[in-house]
Length: 262
DNA sequence: TTCCAGGTGCATA
DNA sequence: TATGCACATGGA
Image 1 (cartoon, rainbow, N blue to C red):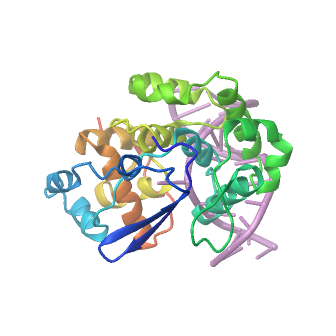
Image 2 (tube, chains in turn purple, brown, green):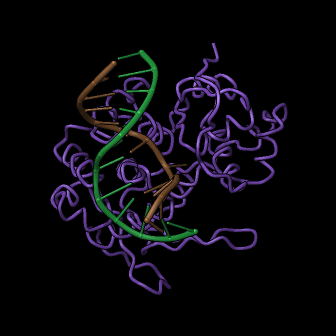
């Protein structure tokens, strides 16, 4: 597991150029982070019966889920609530600059910083976190940092318990709802049941599969968990990027009351 | 100036 | 249990 590492990965024709501090990252670490061993071709082949996912797979060849550091993943998604992606990147950059340790990345024009530890953010406190454009999320992030720093939330254990139990533990964290919790369980722990439903995915599912109905997120999640088993999380990621590629605005459809898939 | 963003918490019915 | 609204901030 890559923890506290700082990487610069550049895509070059036919290969990836990885720059890291010294010899701090092994090949095995990289393969784990990039999930290069995951049989993506086999999964995509199973999507041939679905015209929407097939088109998404063509649009994003080689798109894989990363296996991210659990704390960085949790903290980043706590910051994501009602923020644009470009703003989330800016928040993460500011947090790293202000509270993260510097990292010596080769050929970097400007100094890089690691994502700050739970201890660092817990010590920073809510007021200083607000200086990173966090707004009301600062309180949530400070609380989460304290929970992890004080050992009341063991993030590393979430990968070793069942999905429902891991979900329950994460939902105890202030500022963490079903969407953020599922992001952590999918992107950091690789729980195959995890399926985050955000505004983009909800819009994509409605546009492609339920154009005349409006389903609640739970119903959408049940639909795709069943339809795209055993790896619905991968379908989520392809639909997310496919919808964003279209450039559609991520607002849910207006008409019709909620319906259930059952 | 207005709207809205990789949601969540809380009050109310 | 379902629904509506507030929450900070900044870019379009």
